[in-house]
Image (cartoon, rainbow, N blue to C red; front, top):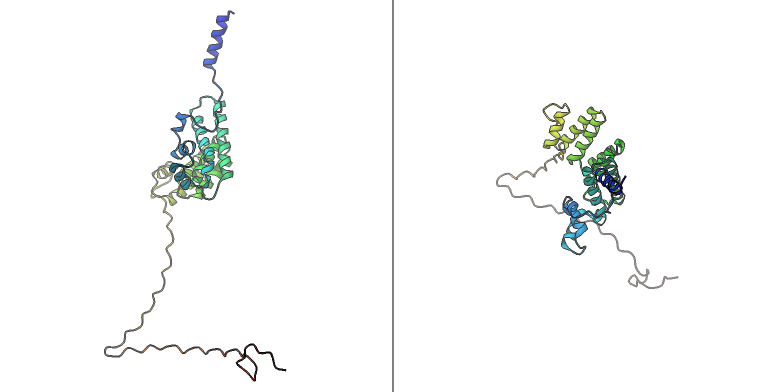
Length: 257
């Protein structure tokens, strides 16, 4: 084989062979950044002293300092959906899971993106064929905010994929009770075999009415209003004895022998 033929063969092999994924670090490139939420762009690009950074810090909570891991997880998921080879997809899923796991461990009580975090990690676990872990994540997301629609739909899809359609319908039914106006849940409810009317929404229990205070009866016409009766003064306690029997006004006199 000539050198030219060998070069041509290697070139064609390089063109047709899928390239392995290369991890470029946590920071997305310029094109990838445009596909991320605005708080991710602020986290990566805004100065910590800028009003934009401070505004997102106040809205997201204390975990804004760690948010580049969550944003990196989102970016790895975007790369997963655009990857063409199975090794690349597996690599990006693992990297997404690592970053979402980091955020779960660093999670603070005031983190405003808890529902999204557990929904995203649940989706990764579902794609990694870990249904038990995915169910835990979706249920956690529902417990954080029962009115969040996405976790109900994700959990229902997972149940359908695992041949548990009845559980899927139960999940969507519960979702509709919390969010009765959700068209996505209504559509999924009908697709899973639910019948109209849609489930009754959960109504907050009203506070028990307090008994009305009886108003004093009005005096008859011409009668003088009754004088207000003042309560008798409480008996005052006798003052403590001071001094000595011979000199009761001497507070600091020595005791008599």
